[in-house]
Image 1: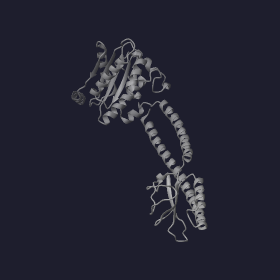
Image 2: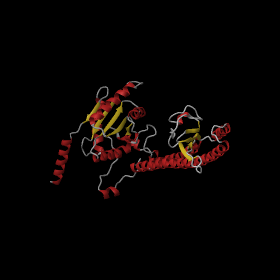
Image 3: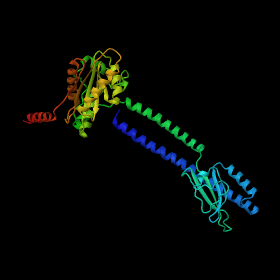
Image 4: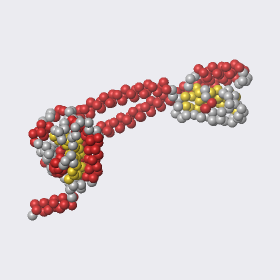
Length: 388
């Protein structure tokens, strides 16, 4: 898939995630504000009711006052604590659903034996404390406190359901977009665009190790099949050279190494070999068919020594999981090693190394180790000869 399309998709996905987060926060804030407004109205109604009973009874400890306030308290599910207190004389009335809301528990719900302004344990966002003067007109040192739950679970579920529906729609649209983008074949930049830009033409892969008829059979697959073979799950062979050139340009631009691994197994169906390769190398878009028994794997940011260790580990793991008759695995390796090389040279070097590995008894791992100094000297000598 085109990297620009993937980058565009990632950016859109991040923006969508931010939208989801802001949308959820906005909906929760609206719900919390509505609940707080209702809580303030509910506390005001409780204050008026308690004041009228207090003025009629003349005592907070009367049975009528206590029974009425307990009934009003139980009617409001979001009311967690109700208190009437004086900063000099302490609590006159206290009822709570849980003693944990008091930092210093008085020992009973409805009456406390300590004085001073009370301290509560409140969870932010979910709970809120509201304080009002019990009788503003009388000037007494009396206050009424209420702790309300700002958000109920039942109020969160509809918001989560809306987010779920939005996410499902986005995933469906993304799936259609990704499938459509994967089916689009990127045109080669030759001859018109390449001639204008001065870039070298990228030619199709001509493998140094595969017979021409076999490669012709693999390349004859219809382009409608996409980037990957449905039989093996590997990339089609005709895409290997283009992808390898792209990875080589990226490695040269960031001054990093890159290795190419060619893997073959004698008398082996490529499906069986592809399964082993995809189980060991997780990057599916860097593994390609070469012929009926050979697979190519591009290893970005890995030098030849690390790639050799990868090949040995892969060979050991494949041997340990083997259930059929012994089939030896051979590996040929080559690396950029600081050189400005194209896909054809790296394929040729790895192909020669694979042939040597296949000729070894029991299968072998052979690496083509290039000397970058000699390579640069050869390039310089060739340039000097042309200029002379």
